[in-house]
Image (cartoon, rainbow, N blue to C red; front, side, top):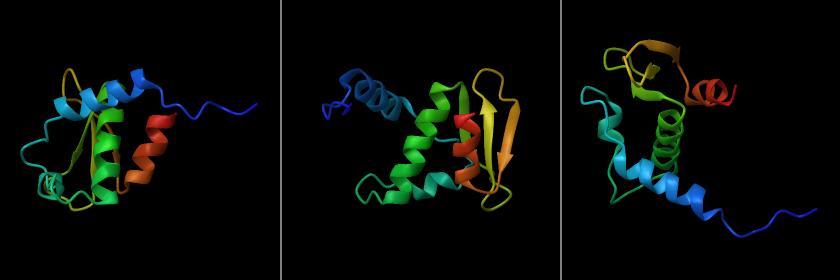
Length: 96
């Protein structure tokens, strides 16, 4: 059976709200990647993944002292819950 090609407006609205509410970790190198005038596929992927992490109760940050190190923090208490060298691994973790 074919799925409807009509987008789920509720999901799109939640995604848009999450993007509007998102605030970068101030020490994060990811802050330099954000330029809303020149959004690249990589930046869009990062925004989407950050919103997805927030919905799951995490904050995704780039480790300021180590390049290419991504950390998922508990959104309530800031505890480090997952670390990875790649966004693909973060995506896999969020899918579990």
